Length: 558
Ligand code: ATP
Ligand code: MG
Image (cartoon, rainbow, N blue to C red; front, side, top):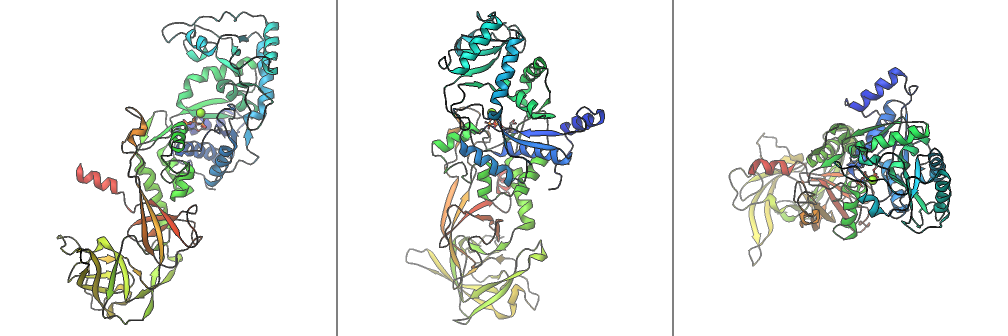
């Protein structure tokens, strides 16, 4: 894959400097360390592109490592989905994925080492008491009454913790640092807790589990990571990351923080996304409205569009909210170049061409992609009866309506010019059919005499087509900042999904025909929903409209 981190970012500068000074012997070794407690989202995609991208750029390595230290929330389903999503984005990690749980034994031995050096102790306080005695930013904490246990006693108690002699929460192992430290993370943080729970990989081997801060630096160290890149909220944890590794006098990577990706009209937090799934607000983790990688994939996003977006938003130290339109535009840019164009009528209105031979079926040439000549042409069926989009006709058109209306002539793309003569309605006054005439001299949608028509419509033959269900999506949240002011659930857009069940499509479309979304002429990019489609009934998801309708809307009202 081509190198993707072309934009200048401060992490590259750090790496360049390290390479100059020979700090890591010219090595660059990063990692992406998800906790398998949910599906990956677009924020993770940014971290993946950054970490794997740097490894590609510097001929280094990037590990995929599961940070599976919490048996209560983690599941194998999440592991499987994460592997699938990272591969789909186009990245490789060389070896097998790695698991923090594979290091539980080594972490335990490191803890014993810390106890032996007098730098850790077993504490009997429960979590509430620990919290109470921790102090505040203004007030120092209080030393635990168990802080001065002897090394031997600590060794003995820790062994008993490990062998299961205590109940959940009865004891913890804490680092002995400084209860008056200005950084609260340094006030004797908990390293191990007791949890009698079955782990998705180690089963019941362990009943003590390491806390994140203790585990993470060791994982990085054991894997000989050079640059441990994480998000800004870990900046205050860096002194602790450094302290553990310094005390153990072991290999010591450099932690570097960058700002998380936030998107407007979107939530990116596994916990909140899980709530949307568990409470049935969406169909599942891969619902096309979800900002998960699997949801984006089902919606029609391409790996290229997500990688380009991640690169485009850059890497900074300052928290910002990126406009979700930027993500959508990245997809448009990609699909505009590559996606096959097809005819699809979402809301069909029948047109009868009265002067066209009754049983004739002819084939006109249609261009597959005007942006890519090599995509070639295909044949489209044309007949006396066709469907056009209902909103392409108006009986009493306003001034700048260039589509069809009584007496007006338009071009049917790739076919002929037609003129509307009559609009047929049912008893209730609903428009059911148009009667038009065509000009046989305008084949291919061009006129010999050079006369111009302003409107060009898409269409599908009544004689030869397939029916499909179309799902149109709008933003999942009404509010630009769904997480501000109260519960984000209250900002859910009730109309984020609209289902159309009577669309008609040109016959070339079928399951498995294209992996890429199609451009439906004039209406947007649509991808076959392989989950809900059958050979008899196709379901399409609209990935994105052709243009940013929100930008136009805002212009109008703004
Ligand atoms: P969430 O808040 O969604 O639960 P997390 O940070 O708890 O996310 P992890 O599985 O721990 O999820 O994340 C794996 C990696 O992805 C971490 O290095 C984390 O910093 C990074 N990451 C998570 N969310 C974002 C984001 N919004 N932008 C950039 N990187 C992110
Ligand atoms: Mg986390």
